[in-house]
Length: 210
Image (cartoon, rainbow, N blue to C red; front, side, top):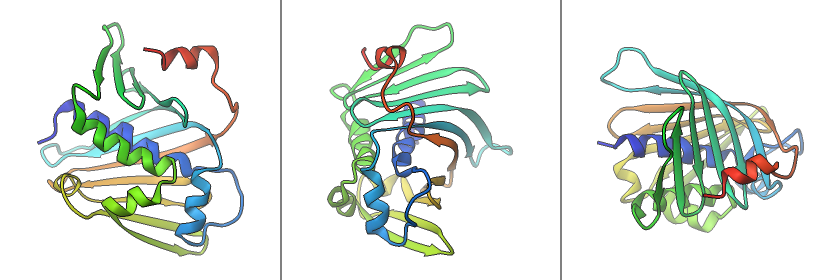
């Protein structure tokens, strides 16, 4: 059973895949053209709505907020509802801050398995198809301008957590779904994606310096 840290980390790591979000451009028609988009921009910003369905709860858990993904620095995930949470993920550190509380930081040295998973997901952002095909069976399909990419884990430890990971979109990723082996499902809807401004503000830069 995943810890609370692991559950929050999955939400973070899932966001790393949204680097395929792009403004209107050439239609994605196959895996190669989708992968090409992964490398077009260094920064993507936008809004998210996350819904998590857990077997033991009758109603799904929902949260909303904003995100910033920077290829050089990492991921800034700012939940605004139902309560404020600030999460910052870099290559080797994760900091979580609840409103009015002291930030909590975890390093790759302290939890190497968690960061193994983060590096897998970041490989999508970097367009590292070799890494992805080592870990997942990739199934791409497209119909009427809308594409779907299903990632099915080939082996441990990923297949102990996920049945599959599904991305759906048109020019951008619209929906990312994480189906867990134990039956729980997380769905994240993305909106208002932009690549501007193309550099970090001083305040954003400071978030990654911890």
